[in-house]
Length: 115
Image (cartoon, rainbow, N blue to C red; front, side, top):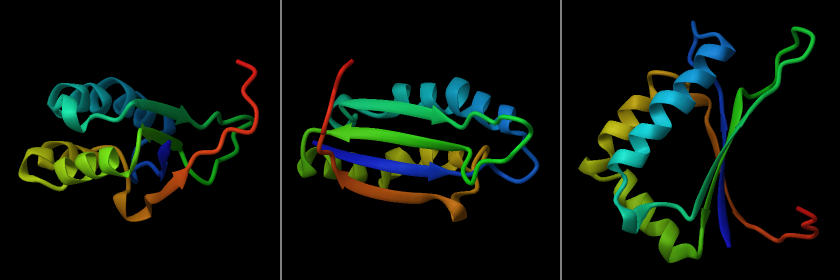
């Protein structure tokens, strides 16, 4: 299982809540509508930072996209970088600072799963 992890920071001028609401309520549904079935990840999870006591987290969120293998991930990358993926890429500028985004491609190795 290949997992792509993205560490996301909100766009300057947005509150953490505005960032979270936009990512969840606008950006994710856009992706659901325009990403073709053959390019969709097997699983997509949004992790929104919990701000306690007024402190700031180093990132506002962590995105996780699961792919069955490298070929499945490559189909998503090819779509994302194509003209068809441009609306999703453009929308990212509405809520995140893409210059601060960190993306890590991992080989997920589950050590314990008691869910």
